[in-house]
Image 1 (tube, rainbow, N blue to C red):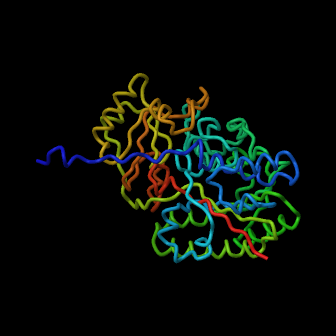
Image 2 (cartoon, rainbow, N blue to C red; image 1 turned 180 degrees about the horizontal axis):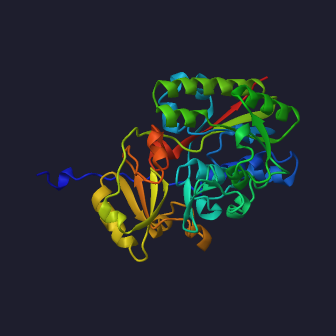
Image 3 (cartoon, rainbow, N blue to C red; image 1 turned 30 degrees about the vertical axis):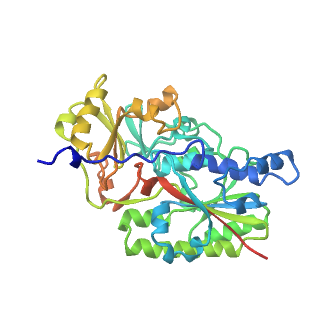
Length: 390
């Protein structure tokens, strides 16, 4: 029998850098850079540039922030040859938030706040004993925009520090959704129907002298979920690189393109973990997603369920109580009672390429690549800057 020297070494989670190079700090810093030249705000912005901000952005008079959903730093650097335009960017990796999932990360990006404050704490969130699908804004399979008003669920201002509404260039289908209302607030939406339309909209906004444009493209994430990180992913990355080149072609002098993402990806395929019956007897509800699964347990049972879960799953996942998640800084602070009520009692967060099954959300089984956990592949995202010459 193997001795102690063969014991499994549990990796440390990659925690969000809420005090530094994190998605939650990016938009406020960029908006400060495009404050009108000559004003006190501009002077203050230049004197307080964080060290992680790529140098071209400190010179920008206009900024386009392109968010490439699902493009992690590790996936990009492993495929540099497929993305020659992106490879020319000036920049560094920054961290996503926890969970490293679209709903939480995009809300942190737009509001400049950690999940503990804005309250969008995952993909599927407990509200009043039911589960709200944040991206679809559906409760019990039904449209929840009236029963759970998005701007009450997430009441904080989007794009803090902006001089007026920020133009958002995103897929036209996303305009009327509850999630758009929750995380984008009063932003003015400019819909696109194809990637070429994204470029057209950005070009028009730059020519109208918009100081800051937020553009969102979701192709990488869609392909990774559907087909994994193989040849389809490689082909989509090449297409994204051409999209970036097209955007660079319409940048006027003084404008800078910043590229980032909300999270990376891990190839999981059909591998899932089933929560055993002896644990499920204490579980009343399941929320979150496969790579950041919350168990809502009977009152007083959290410590016992966490201990049992560590025995069963400790070799492949970080197991934490909600109190430990907060104490270790995963969510970026102490949640208000309202936000805390949305959390489960025990979190199962895999560091191995697997996911925890929720029998009420079997659609996740179709996902080839996933995200949500605190591995470097999911947590590190690019922050790259591009400026034209001449």
